[in-house]
Length: 73
Image 1: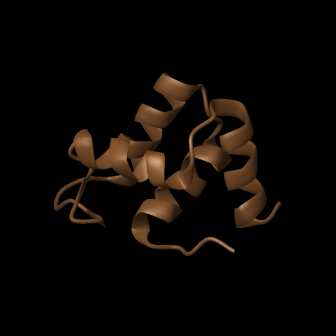
Image 2: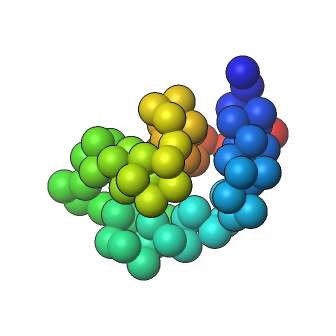
Image 3: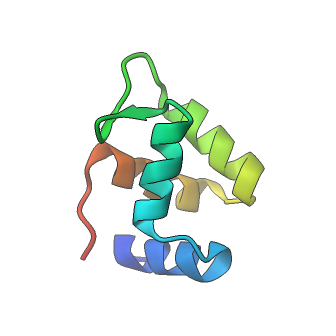
């Protein structure tokens, strides 16, 4: 599955866009000025996504990659 397909599936499931996830991550302190905040580990972000949105590991990692700066198609 392509990165964009993961994001499309996430949006279909949650109704939230990549920008929405960026905003939520910022409000939760996982990111600062669009970058992963110092000391924040991937597991903290993926655990949040798995708990709050019931994501599997692949979908959670797609959002983590997005937050790390991977570009959408």
